[in-house]
Image (cartoon, rainbow, N blue to C red):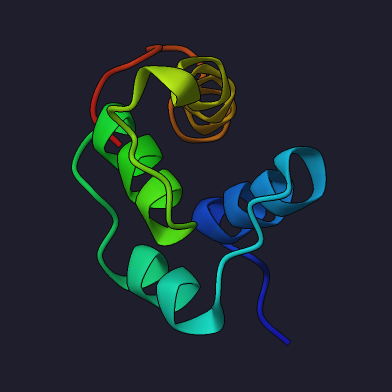
Length: 82
């Protein structure tokens, strides 16, 4: 049995904490080819859930996604590259 990667832990946390439980094909796509930075990763998660990441109505939720992504992927650097 293999250990989960940082991306797998992140995707599990997004599901359990924020309800972003991505379809298996979306999850695999993000694991194999993650976006280059945290903002782009958050946008991809929202888009995978059928949301417009640039819609002002989603601003607070996008902020929560960004915070969780940053915590998992770059805790010491904030919003830098993944």
